[in-house]
Image (cartoon, rainbow, N blue to C red; front, side):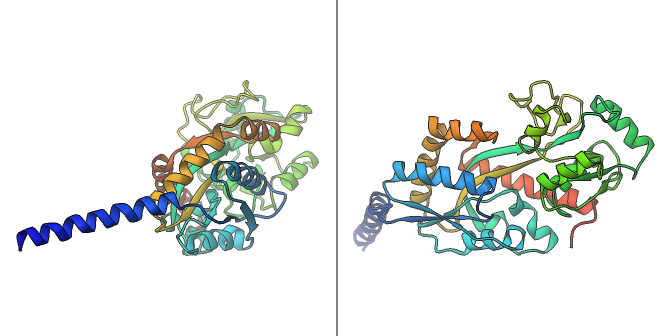
Length: 322
């Protein structure tokens, strides 16, 4: 009986091993869908499409981008999280997956996806008009401390990533997240137009979004909310250098639905890693001013957990949690 039991165990292990090898050897055998949770023509759409194009070369099958928009990112993130976990539907999650559930937009969280890799991050910056009275970050902070509630900031809607950037920064320097008035906008472009027109005093959008105005000498970045300086703007200090423990970025990654077999996600991770290192990807991202950042599946998973916790705390402090 003992010998029979051992035989059954060995047989089970054999069939499991065989099935795993067949699964990985047989994947992929048909086109893959990549869900982009934001609209055509935007930064996430552009990143999705270059990665999809290059993944086709690595995986040998078409990777088709499908834009699933709505609900401030909730529709697309829900679609990628609830798809069949067979490796034939993946997606490009963005920072909003660590924010949306806090404000009641969806019940979907980072726990509902299988992280594959982080591929991009564009840190927030503190941008003012070039003709503003603040020439340095210290001058701006001193003004805010002496005049709480007087300045106006914008870059996204209420509770969006650049609002979170501002609130977290103020909290980190010991001020109320409401020490600067947040003026909701439909994005960085209209906010920067408002900045030029004098409707707001600053914008905490990313450096790539403000790059054209910075290079034209119309906007001055006083600091970047990152651990390292941006190579394109080497004279802009980080908050970390200034002794402030706060970083914030809009980021993009690759993920699959929760429950996708490890053998499949490992194949995808290796393929995305090759794409990320390719000259075509690097050239594309640099030409558009997008930050290039890499985290493997394990590091990305840890990053998501921390980001979700940190963002929740800041949003609660700012009074934007429902």
